[in-house]
Image 1 (cartoon, rainbow, N blue to C red):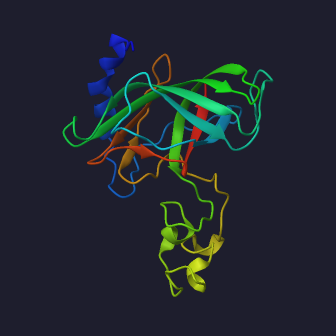
Image 2: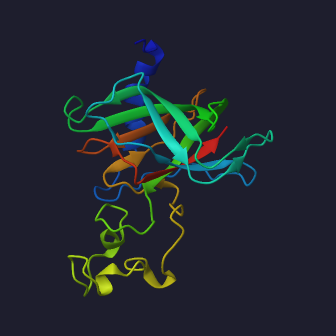
Length: 221
C-alpha cells in the first residue's frame, strides 16, 4: 500500500497545529475552524463502524453515512444514506507516539445508493457524539448527558429516563446540533486547509476511537 512521502512530512506540523490549542481532557475544545459561509454546503454524517488509531493504517478507508439529503452547489443531489468515503493518510496510535494519537484523513467521494461515486472535497469542521436519545450509556446517550438524577439507574423507570436530562431548559435538541470543533472526550480537531483539505485529529493521552454514535459536519470546498 503506497503512502505519499509528502503526507508523512505533515506529522510534526499537524501535531503542533492541534496542540497549539490544547484539548481539555474529557471535553476537547480546540480552536474552531473558520465560520462557514452561508452558501457553503455542510454535510452531516455518522460513522458506519468503529475505527481506532489502535488498528488503522495509512491507506485504509473510513466510511460515514449521511443522515439528511443534500444538494451540492452544482445541483447534484446527495440523498440521505449516501456514504462519504475518506482515506487515511497518516495514523499514529498512542503507544507509538509518546502517549498521543494522530489521525489524518481526506474525504474524496460520496457514494450514492446506486453505487455512483460523486467526487467531493470535504473537511470535518465539527465532530462529537450524537445528541439523539438512546437507551444505552454511551457518550451521547440520554443518561450519559447529565447523570441518573433521581431515577433508577437500572432503567426501570422514573426521572432517570427523561430524554431532556442534562440538556438544560431548552430540553431535547436536534441530534445533529453539534458545535463547531470537537466535543469528543480527549480528542482535538485541527484546521489544516492544504490543497487537498486533510482533516487532522489528535488524541491527548488516548487513542482516537470513532464509532457509530459519532457525528461529523463536513464543509465542502
